Length: 75
Image (cartoon, rainbow, N blue to C red):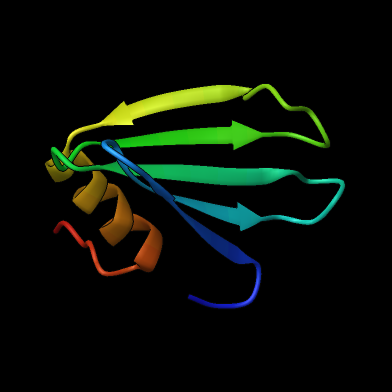
């Protein structure tokens, strides 16, 4: 999927995408569940426990993706 992104199948759950932010910064993991919902995990540094966890519906995830991608504008 690109440099710094790892993909792992989670049987019966969906897929997990890990974005490496560098050793000091940590990583972001997104679990895309088979039911369409997403779980966003933020890891800082080398910690094995997430600093933050956000559960998103499919619609919320699409809106967040549009914001992050710079394609969502409201006048």
